[in-house]
Image (tube, rainbow, N blue to C red):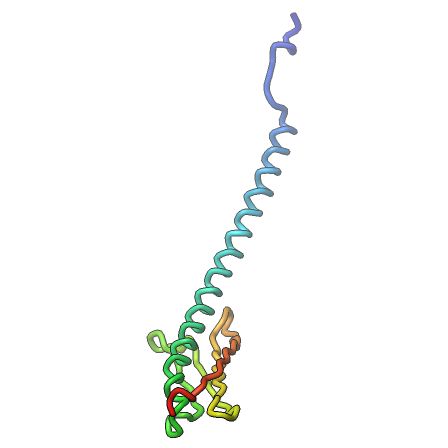
Length: 129
C-alpha cells in the first residue's frame, strides 16, 4: 500500500480558509453587538426624555383650566450635576374652552448632540364650568 493513502487530515490551505471564514463571522458579530449597544443607550435616553415630558403633560392638564396657571414655561431634568433633558411647553387657545398643550423635549444624544421630540394634546375645560 502507498504511504500517502493512509494519511488523512486537512491541508494547510483548508485550515487557512477555515480561519478566514471564522474571523469574518466573528468580526460581523462584534460589529453588530456594538451597534445594538448604541441603539439600546439611545433608546434609554429617549425613554427618559419621553417619561419626563409625559409627567409634565399630566401636571399641566389641570393647570390648563386655570387662567393663572396656564402659562408657558420650561423645566430641566438632572442626573447628578448634568442635565439629561429639558422641556419647553406652550399653550394655545383653540376657543370654546379648549387649549392645546405642546411640550418640546430636548435631550442629549451621543457625542454631545441634542435631539428634539414634541408631544401635543388638546385639553377641554368644559367640565370645570
